[in-house]
Length: 431
Image (cartoon, rainbow, N blue to C red; front, side, top):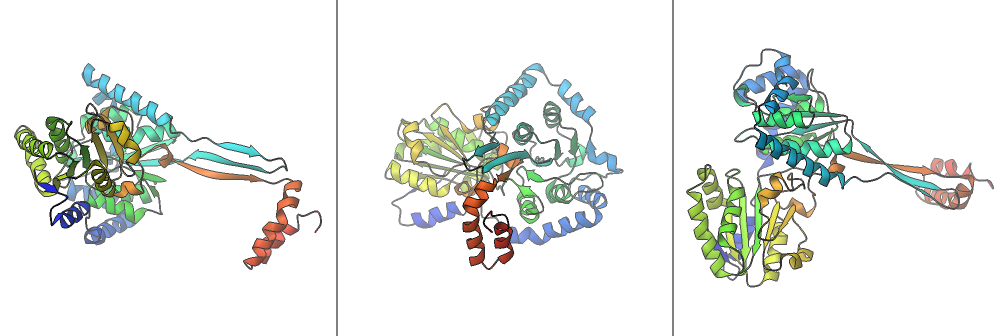
């Protein structure tokens, strides 16, 4: 694995390359995705069937075939062996418990002059979840996207997932049953995003779309934003690790590879203050690679988008990591919790040697749908609030309008909005 030092003459260029890790050319695929969206808007199910035949390699003979039956979901759940079923339930319960703590509250505040101000929190009517199913299927992503919507109180949840060769992933179907999903469709890619954003004869239009996907899915989400709400525009998976001389290179190496095995575009970056840890970790990465089932994918990711940076101090390491703003950040130092206040930008933060990133992917409880490509500087993990909206509540008494109305009317006059001003003044006792 490539090792670079912050004192190297070319470090600035090397670091700029790391920062550009997720720069995918959306412009390059925008015209393709726009055509797909337009086709779905105009031709609906007919277009969906053509896209499925082209991209997923099977022929849809009827509209009914687009939908995954709830019977198939239940059958898949019933076939699970006990340990796997128990693991799914454990994950479900922990994710649900965590997200229940995120629920914002409606509130009302009464002022002495009779002013009533407040906030009303309401779930969206219908949420659309996109669950990837290309190189791998991710039942865990179904849990992570569906459970916050369930906790928020969304009445109708729609799931779209690609099913190459018309072969749905059985564990994904089981997870759908566990989450009480009744509307799931064998549709993937930009076609699925367009179908959920605009609706077809079979797939209902939704209010918000969440879930990760490839560049075509990300571009489609960006293009339909405004027609519907979206969670974020997520790119390839990534991990950042901060380490010092106390870190175990075996742990560091396999944690770096845990993201590299997702796909060739994944990014694995470690910043350490110890030369020896850097060298031993690089050696362990090479050793582990030979044992992985997805070794070719992981190797390409590590070779092209992985790096170990040796920093002169922990403060320098933290500053660099804050600039990277990784999707997942592991702090593998002797004093992990002491560093936490200094971390400004990361999707999820994993503290201590016994907290590998995969714990967060499956069982810990916090959401694993996270901002990538430095967007953790302004995006948050998927959460309950993605499925909620807030309305302001305002009520004025006669005393309140008398007290505050003239100031309001004066501001309206200043902006040249005389009807605004008059609307207030006609209600004043002294008008």
